[in-house]
Image (cartoon, rainbow, N blue to C red; front, side, top):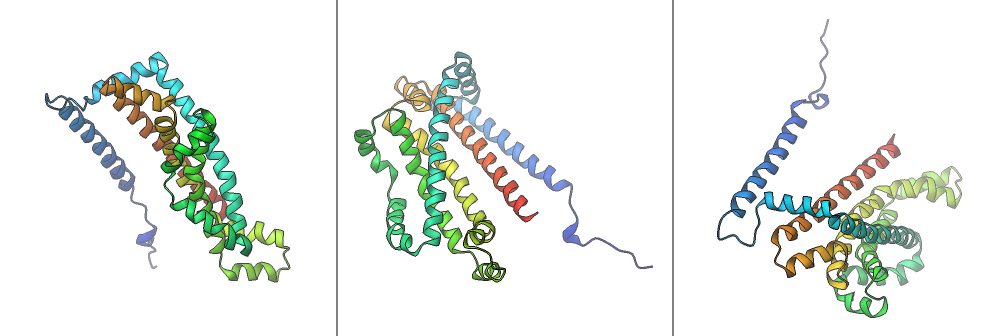
Length: 263
């Protein structure tokens, strides 16, 4: 009797994930060790050892300064991101399906997409003020164009054959877009939303540094003005960790949504 074996492509190597995590952990430990070694050299006064940075971060959370700053930055980022997502997906869908919008709105979108957002900070300071409203608008501008362009591109890239199949079943225009066009464009839309998360973090911190000193931006500027290197680096590391967590969360939501679509 012939023996059956699984194809090589179907076999799962259990050492793969173990090796991956081993490399990741080893790389992080090596980076922290090199950071600690360099930070303790007498001539490296601009780089604090990682142990001092960790102590500064602990003290910042213990005093409540980091917690309040993080909450304020998250508020700015989340509100701005939600507004940008609603506008970006909505207008992107309109551009994707409307010839009129492609001829009138899309050129303006491309111009805005190519314009450095930092150039608009002086104007925003004049017309929106330096408080929360101005910071939220800056976050919206940081991420709305990325979401909008990806959404409109996804709608345009839907294969015509899929639309023809929907029409052959006498689907209404609403059902055609809801059941055919949107599911086909979903990878593009979620890609734009995921990239928008990272840009929202950058926009929030940029607004707090350049538009008005607030939240994490105030922590960073205060540490810079007093040459408190451990606190300055702790604020930077905290911002990086926030970005890492939120980007991982966005990737998880993207995978689950696309897996649900194909299930």
